[in-house]
Image 1 (cartoon, rainbow, N blue to C red):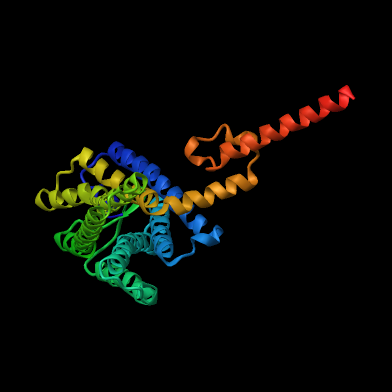
Image 2 (image 1 turned 180 degrees about the horizontal axis):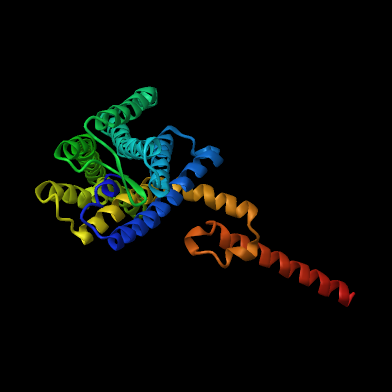
Length: 328
């Protein structure tokens, strides 16, 4: 959102058209990815656990953030203000929900607490309340103007400073918190793993690979926000130093990576083993057997080969019975 709001000044009409296309395409991918996670949570009852409920709120925030980025605004006035503020609100809510996921994991694994579900109301107050506060503060000294398909923030120094303090300051605070939290969780689990290996003569190789895969996956979570907003932060700093000079390639990376945040979150947080298992079970129930052959191997049910073998055995039995009847 912030990337889009400040990438326009000093660029040609052709440059802004390209940025519009990049934003629309990347935001559409994020919208599809986050909507998929929201639908999975709503349709599959087995996913409605507390841990995935936080992922649902994250995906919901990403979905609404991406939606308002796609919609843009072709007019001035109240609608322009509403589009700018709602996008800011839901983008802030998105990275704040990642901190609740990190907090939950840390409290469960490191501190061995089991009261995280009792904190859901506090999570909502923290995420939605903080998002509302920074969005309201952002309105001080911030005068929206229209440029192309978006609402653009004021180009003055005061507006830029407020924008930076209400978006990038809490963003990088969330990045630092997530990185520190996941570092502690991963370090503790690895230490526990070493102790288990030392006390046991044999460690299951499959379990070892699975645990390492999970640890590596957690290590990537903080990198999502860094990858999504690093170019935006650099672009904002450059805009402070040289306000009249825009770098097109930096603006393109800024807009594209920021708009892809929802897609990155949906893949990393949402498309986990529980979701894949739920999808496999539905495919097994509702899709005809012949369609399985055209699906990628990772989307086929785990017992797909067993089902095919059983059906082939049944067909052979039926053929033997028919031949026997013919001979009689």
